[in-house]
Image (cartoon, rainbow, N blue to C red; front, side, top):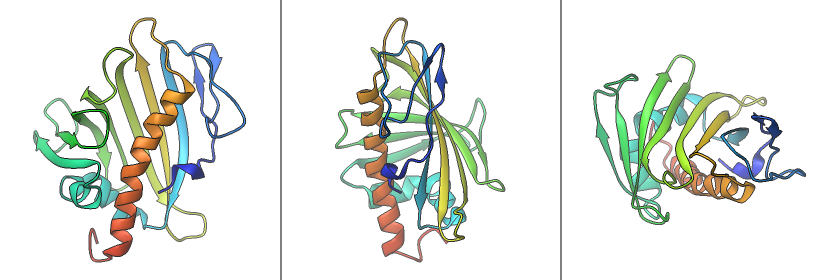
Length: 192
């Protein structure tokens, strides 16, 4: 996946509107919740990519992106809800020691999943939480996947979250996703 293939503009934030940081717009200091919507393409089929990102991430991510993810630990029963699975990613190249995700929902039939960052990572002084909603659909040409993503950044009190900070978040994710995509292309038997 390449986040440089972002096609859609972002959506509103309170009374301000944020535009695609890779487009012609700009973002001023933003207060409150920031919602950012984007689409990326991948040559990997939707079902295979879903399996890699949702069901096999604990095994696949450290193999595909050892430069970024040292290990993945699963907690809980694996389903959405209060007792659901949370994923602890022990990262190596990010400026964080770890990032803990909590699965909010997953729908294998519709190839959609959602999760939020609940500990570590970018959370702290500026961000209270970050949530992600993702839907995988067949690309228009019938080959590969169009991934539709919605990210929500919830700031702490009067903190601001800038365009550069959003770009940095996307850059970190892009590095891991590109590595996963490359790994799947090089290993066609994985996640089939």
